[in-house]
Image (cartoon, rainbow, N blue to C red; front, side):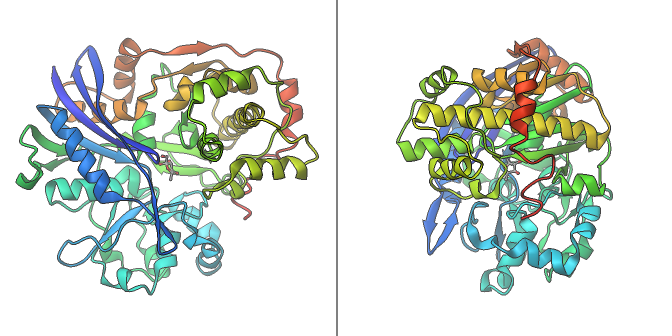
Length: 482
Ligand code: LRH
């Protein structure tokens, strides 16, 4: 048995988890949790990355002696280093408005179909490609020698080594998924210098020991894991066969299937399905559903803090009284979600929820509907068939959402583990250390033997969900048409 540490940075909080792993055992303990609060300054929304780094060091010291540590975080965002290795400004938050109008401009010059054929990536205004296109001509970008995605930036500070872990690189829209290398033609066509993109690393690569200045003498080495949080979360799905869909449910609901190769059809592009690089050469074929962000932002507006009692109250509200399409881009930036939801209900001639409980019900119903739409579209577009939906991440705790997802999909939901991302992170490290052997299926066998999973059977014949779905407008994505 050996111990490992996972650093998992989410959009609203970060955590450091210690895991003790053996061939037949896997135990997690959270040793440090800290808030991740973006800062609006000079009209731009930033991540406070140095305070995150300080908390990471605190957490890794608290983890005690470990064979290795690995870092994952949300995708797409990056820091720029100058020629001396200094960070050029705080990373900008993917929900910042600097990319407004940029996707249209970039696609007009490169071609949306060419971009999809090369990178396989969904159209999201926050893709790294669009963020960089928005920054073209700034002194910061001109001075940049290296671009490091957030987990790679943390890994650089810990080890002094520059690199780009592959699963997260695949979310940038600067990465050629078929060839598994940087998409140099897309990068140069955008006006960017390909030299700022560091050499790629496969998940499982040992990066090196922590630098003495970190004070982490108890950490033997830093290992590149599936550094895109969703890549680690999908490793952490305790599936028993390949016929599963997943909902990695937190700030976002990432809904899709695991494939051997990308789906690059026109129908897939128009449905805004993405092909992201997974651990062991897999493809995460999925759609971004707006997720519990809708509830988190609403709770901020209501100054509410108890999500459990809000969801219990929502469970007593009438079902499907008012639904809206969570993937509408109006819900992407921070702001007054209840007002935006009310406007969406008015627009579609539905009653406007009157209380936080009714709004919460409307959010959960709408997310379950969006899960159903994405699970169906993923199967149709990839010509696969699933017989179970795994819900992992914080959303697995939300009983109402899990039950309604089962009802809406007409499939059993297996909920848990809540800490799938941290588990996927440490499993890749444990394999590198030779503690667990084999492929993803072997790791998932260990997860099934050691982690708690709750089963929800689907209720009803799904007719009311079919009726409610008509308000959504089919399988095309509003983001693809923006
Ligand atoms: C989830 C996530 C998701 C990305 C988004 C930016 O945390 O990594 O997979 O699309 O953040």
